[in-house]
Length: 227
Ligand SMILES: O=C(CO)[C@@H](O)[C@H](O)COP(=O)(O)O
Ligand SMILES: [Fe+2]
Image (cartoon, rainbow, N blue to C red; front, side, top):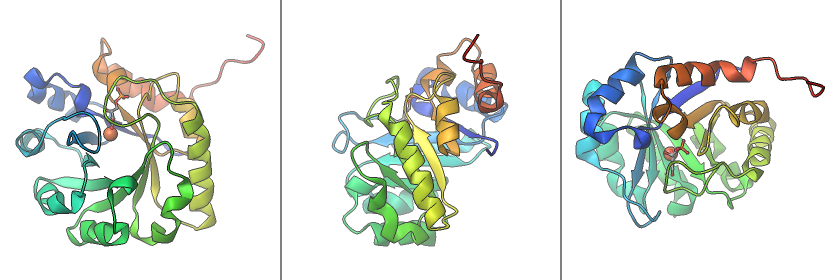
């Protein structure tokens, strides 16, 4: 098991104190910033757009991992790249020409990610694996923070790991939704590399300590079944 990559989701930050929360992540053991963009059409919620992303980018000292929950993402790829995205993840369900979209993301100098909703089988991306740097396995229905992880998604992460191994793909597996101290170990054991955490970080009494504990938890000794 590799050291987990922790990506706190800004969606759960205090937007009235955004700079404070960005600095908190800068000074923590977190690895990336996870940025959720929702358009009110692909998902039943609207998060924030370019002015907020640009404000985050001005202060962030770690890579921006941008998760686009929007229809026709091709319209905005260039703007997200200009706004400082290190990785741009589009939804499989939102792309008519997925290969074209992924190729464009890489041409723009970003890493290319594909997100799969709960019902989308892992094999959906099999034929474009060469164009993918990261696969985001949704562990909730997208659109809102603070939801409980859907248990069946752990098995899906396992299937995704098998698929990537079978194709010798170096793509990272990211999990998103309901990641906390109770779920991170099973997700890491199933083969996830990147862990998005919103509520479990920003709603904790001490977010920096929460990040540290999330990072260490998959390596912590498990309680024996007799205990
Ligand atoms: O993409 C999404 C929601 O659609 C996520 O990135 C959430 O922001 C994760 O929040 P928590 O489940 O960790 O509160
Ligand atoms: Fe997300």
